[in-house]
Length: 457
Ligand SMILES: *Cc1c(COP(=O)(O)O)cnc(C)c1O
Image 1: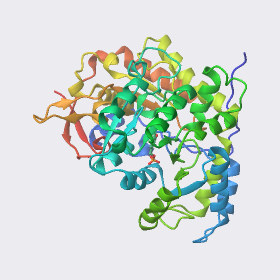
Image 2: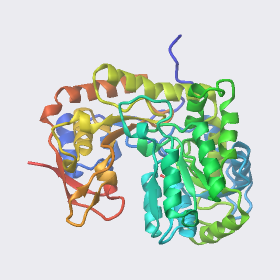
Image 3: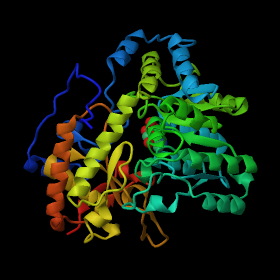
Image 4: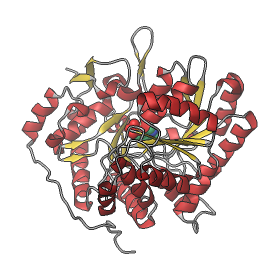
């Protein structure tokens, strides 16, 4: 088999600003050891997120010029609506400015005290919006999904028995919906199988609970189904996506992921009644239902991008790039989540830095070391992001201490990725000198975005 090449040529480029290790030490200290507080032109390779960081295609840029900025009834909206209806089969499409705006609207309506939302793993903004409404979120991830180094094809699956158990305990009447995140971002970008989605659908039907999909990376998930699930090898990704959404009553979406847009999102659903409530909130928080917080040009970029993402040459290159970096790290003995996920490489910080206890945030310590060594920006997905405190202010740690290297779509080439591997391996070789971190300032919600830290003496 020949090298899988980037399925695009580069028409427009952006410079990378180089700096030295000594400069980066100062920058990181000034940013309180929080990568979210570093200015992006102080970063060489930015793997903070794959969200909104995609390179748009020449077709998308052409679409931007076609954007119709009418307040109501813009043709850009109808192209956006049709693109989503064609792919998902969901009849009602409500634009929002990004994924969490969809979540805010949905959970403001369905959430509240005494309500529970069950999921494979709720993403951080999803959980925050659920909890902000007064409701609770419960993750029912399968056992293998919690074991970072055990390779299994569908580690994003829900634990069906656990799901049933929670439904019986809580009572279906207190569960406004079950939400399946595809792929499972917080659990390593691991896919969910069609079989699992079908099983969840059946349980939801039995208990009369709606099923929603957090569809941010639906195309990557569908490509994994094609590669790994028997019976799907000869189906197109578009056909697989149609089946996946056929089991759903609705979805939330961040178009900043699998629609190659720099901003945008939507809610889609079947229920007219729910849609009425959503639109009522939409007009006071986002905008009129035919633009929902977006410019007409953004609607065009999404309508085009959400079709481009189903190109299987693209998906082959995409999934292969993540696997390429993962395999290089495995070969060097670096503890990474296996198998490779869809959009990011996840390093197991607990194993990488066994001398740092979880209450000293080994993931955050690694994030800092990686920035200083090579100017690479990554993000902790562990106890800084998901940790809570008990009544005595002791940390209740997250299930996993991961560091995510999210790969922006169509942005970096293979030599950038080779450089990333070299830097990580360098850090790995001198990991014993890396110190733990302590928090000096934090906010009560989504604290990882703004927390200030310093190394433990
Ligand atoms: C990014 C993301 C969201 C939130 O979307 P934003 O556009 O960042 O608000 C929700 N769920 C998952 C799985 C995500 O990856």
